[in-house]
Image (tube, rainbow, N blue to C red; front, side, top):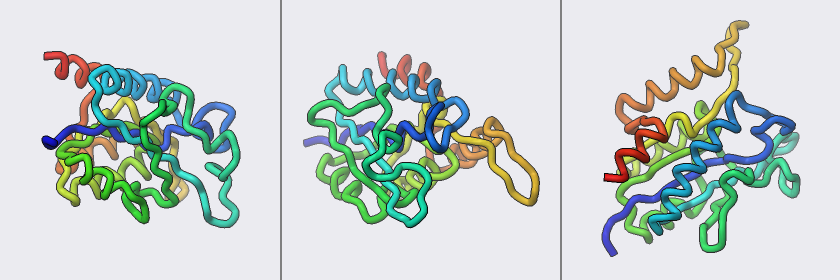
Length: 186
C-alpha cells in the first residue's frame, strides 16, 4: 500500500449550528464547503475519517452523549465504511486511535475541515504536523465564534483570520475549498 492522502473532518456536529447549544458563525456555509471536499474524496475512493467530540466532563453544555446536538451534521454525515473516531479533548489525537488508524493507512497527507477553528482544528493540525503529516487545511470549511479576553470581544471573522494565518506559517497549507478542488482535478 502506498502512502496516501486522508480527509479528516473534525467535529462538524449539530450543536455548532443554529438551534444548537454552541452555535458558530458561518457553520452552515463551512459545512457545505466540507461537504464539497467530502464528495470529492468519496468520488475518488480516498479514505475519510470523521471525528466526533463527545463531552465527558461534568457540567458540559454541548456535545453531551445521547443528544442530537452531539450527532454529526447531516451535510457531512458518515456513510457505511467511513470510520468515526470519538474524542473527549480538543486534540483529535489525544487518547484516541487516530494516529494508529492513520499509520495503518500509510497516510502521508491530511486534508482537514472542521470546527472550531480556534480550538479543535488548531490543536489537531498542530499535533498532526508534529507527528510528521503534511497538512492541507480547507480554511472556508472551518468555523469559529466571537471570543472574549480582557473584557474585549474579538469577532469570529478576526479569530478565523488569526488562527488560519498562524497555522499557515508552518503547520498547514491553508486553502479555499474551491481552489483545492480545482487544483486536484488536474
